[in-house]
Image 1: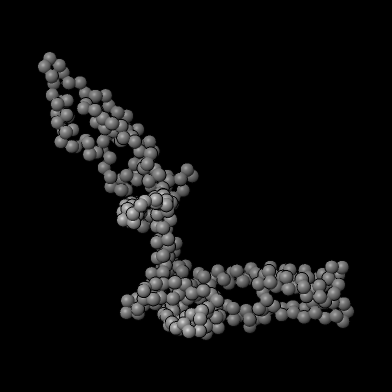
Image 2 (image 1 turned 90 degrees about the horizontal axis):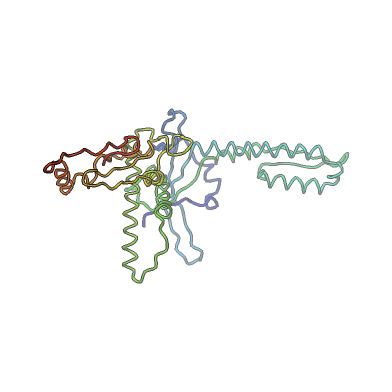
Length: 339
């Protein structure tokens, strides 16, 4: 069975990440979509290493499994963790300084009360592992504290690392390719969202399993068309893949299949007659833009160039005995597009 899954943080100790050599890690040739337009120096960089992860079953007699483990380092993730740690330390320092000033006062007259308050601060700001403190009672209770720099450096060595388990053979995909496959799961999850959202898949109550399978297949075909519409519009927009007019504030966004069909769903077709061809009524410019991106020719419909319509059109243009053919009045081009 082939799979890629993240490893729970509790199953990989910090000592494992701290012992890794980032210089030996392989740089992954992959750039997130959010960094595609940034300079090379500002893009997120991923590096990978590989080893073996041991999985033990819940029972002693269960066999021990050895699975590929890909250790991933993200530069952006590391920066985020560093910023979060600095924020925690700053808030903890401010609260601890207030406690130092209040020690020995009306609310913190005893050692026990100071220690209890200090424990609350350390737990809330998550600085238990690096906080060092002691209380002196020579001239009333006084609190002295500092952060252990060695402990902070140990935490910093773990920043940016996480692990993936892969059931894919090395001959099929290397560690870098495993990470790229894992990063593509967002697209799959978004299609599940479309499957349950715009396509509105609801519980099916039928009597036979083959009918359930048939209905799901129809919905999957609809999902395929849904995805192809979105891809065609984005490809036609060029490298930026953004357009204005989809939202009331006219901001530039990447069009989604749901938003495309929302705007095109308001198109209407006015049924024509023998002398008056059917008309596609366009009420907004974004509709015409989307049709152009999709490569749909709105000036011709199936009815307008069918053999029957050609016969009727020829008959309409042929003057009757004693009569003259009168052309139909023009249609305003601002609202109607001849079909």
